[in-house]
Length: 148
Image (tube, rainbow, N blue to C red; front, side, top):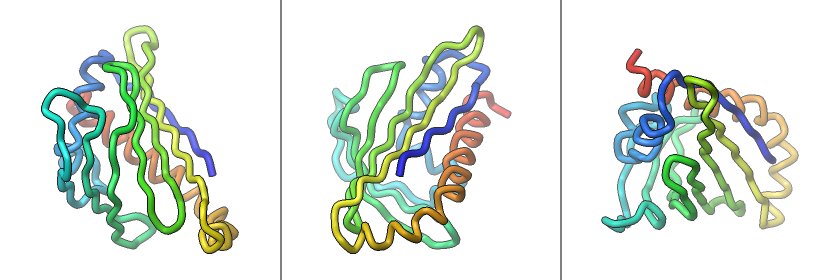
């Protein structure tokens, strides 16, 4: 399952980057996130940051361990999580668009186990809901960056 959503934010790439890389602060910026617990942190590098994130999705509370796998300052970063027989990858990418910045979020779920593949039959019902949840995250980030 691959999903991509985007939003235009009326601010610089640098200011958007500050908000999206403040993983600890995301609990204050994204309504769906209930708790962030940092598990591993390298003081000099964003790559390798690992955290436990608790959020509500589809009316259920879920906790996932996520980490930064790749990043280029003010351009993009990628995260990874592994659970329930699947590998989840997310990318947040910034592109300049005139006076604003486009924030593009890509989400990919790679199903590994037979059980996960079997459950994916129902997963197609959740694609629209997942897209909606990702768009809500982007809207929350836009509000945090623009200060509205």
